[in-house]
Image 1 (cartoon, rainbow, N blue to C red):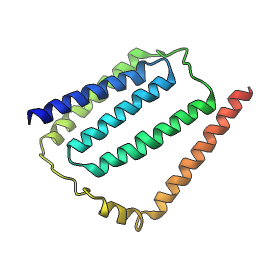
Image 2: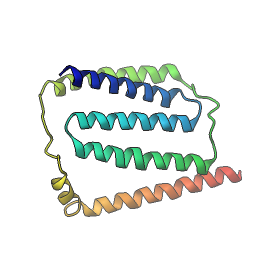
Image 3: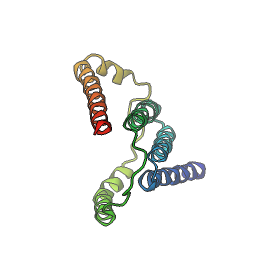
Image 4: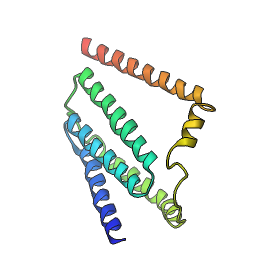
Length: 162
């Protein structure tokens, strides 16, 4: 039990440091790498909670797909510097604290339920639902993401020409 607690606290520290790196970094590329560290650490937390399917989705979709999309957008747009990293830090801090305080009762309630496995250990149920009942929304989501990529390319091209 002590090893699991120690692992959790180490991963929590990595996630907090990565999140702070995303917010405080002046380079967008460094922020992307800090985001990757945060996402991988959260995937390891999912593995520690015996949720291998969610950990795999975290690695494949978020760390792989989303981060690739972010780096691709940075390369296409050509903007690597952020001249004003602190636009309104005080209101952002106030909102973050208020959201954290609002979520604390929910976190304490969920933490005390003693929930075990979520039933998605091997992903069979999820796969069957995804490719039978939810096939059309799944494909529409891929079309929406493709449209977002084309929109980002169009905006980046307009900014470069101006």
